[in-house]
Image 1 (tube, rainbow, N blue to C red):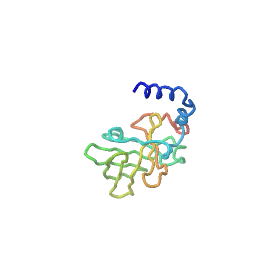
Image 2: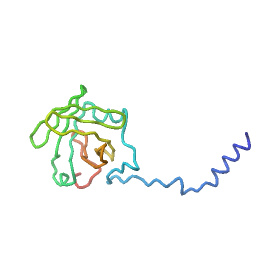
Image 3: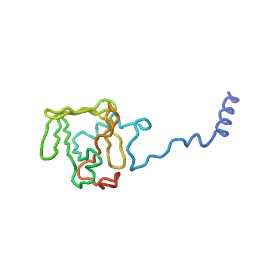
Length: 149
């Protein structure tokens, strides 16, 4: 047993230190990479939406405008209200493992993996891995994307 412990310690001493540093740090201004990063899940994901209002932008072109492209209110009873360009759409939301899904009465819905950068949340399609929207909670000033911060 002592020989085994000694062997493990010796391997640790001679291990390549570069191996432990192969994962690059996350750039706070970068779009999440679903092949390299893990989305929010479980309680984190539920807390992100439960009784929260998000305001956000659908695409980079929206970021040039200081006003958010949309707001979304997720209620504790699983209902949601989406508002864009003065048009209000009701629907439902739910989380499961690492995905949040929205269905609407009058709009297309979708399912998303959510990634966090600072106080910004990136919605990436669970089906295509395309970035769909970037949001912040309430009236927070975004600290992740300098073009609309």
